[in-house]
Length: 212
Image (tube, rainbow, N blue to C red; front, side, top):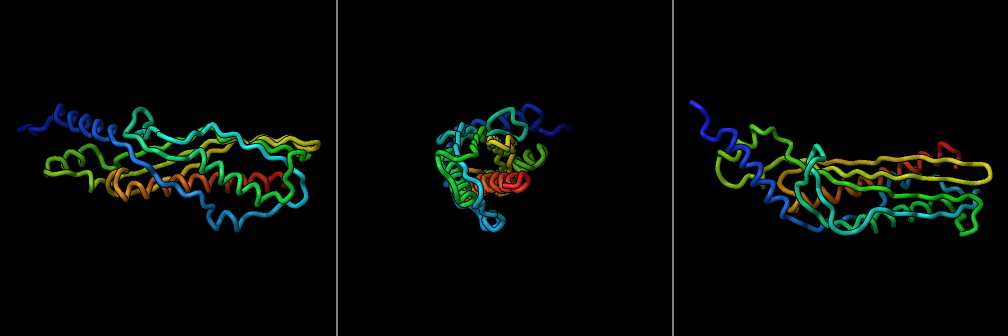
């Protein structure tokens, strides 16, 4: 005897779930705090006279949340990532270089290129169907994964230096529920702040590598 749900029923569950999720938009309160581990690993450069420019292609506001494959959206969130990340990079550079001026001998340009987030159910399709057959809403009990990804570039130009480095920083976290829930909001905020701090760690390692 065949399962009464069938392929068409399973497909309809996925479609309905997607429609519900796509219609949801929530604001994520992301912290601009630089974590202690990043600051402990920072060695202040007191020698080089540098000028710093931060260029951000990352905007504040509504961000589309993609699925695991990156082929479709699972919802939308409002994140002031452009402002938050720019502030974190600026605070880091001020702490890193004690001699910053518009007429610096070395020009450092930090370009914040792209930011994206993904959120998806980590259960198999079969388990999702079984949860649906059990009756009642399953959204509050769904095991999910949220991840954030940043791409950036640093260009350093001076009389004796010419360096360029591309960066990809990411963070992910498991949670139970939906990103519109308190658990989901917290997980989103954590991974965005985590990705931001990992970018700063990578920048610090790059400066150490080239002797700055």
